[in-house]
Length: 112
Image 1 (cartoon, rainbow, N blue to C red):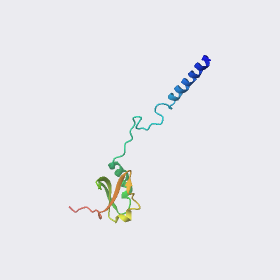
Image 2 (cartoon, rainbow, N blue to C red):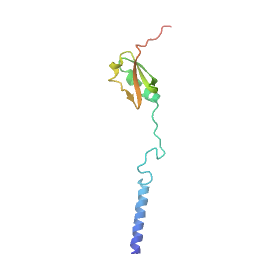
Image 3 (cartoon, one colour):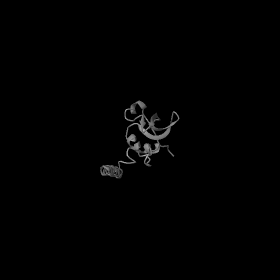
Image 4 (cartoon, rainbow, N blue to C red):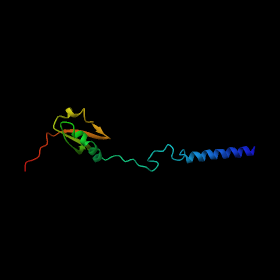
């Protein structure tokens, strides 16, 4: 009887140890942050840079900038056409930041 009990406890210990070694142990189910890894959110500058070429290819878009909308940072789309003409091609939010279309007119260089 004692031999069977010892054998059973030994089997349980081996299975538990195998589970820990194969990854079913202490980190299972934890988020990256709990494991010490941090996922950083891209900055508004990085988001603007990543999308500017795409937006500049849309007729009527003159440029992009970073500004404030209702006291929070936003990405501005500077346009030579009414915002309503661009709204279906430009999202109102990108990765949590508002995208505001502002009619500025056409940009021209100044003569020296």
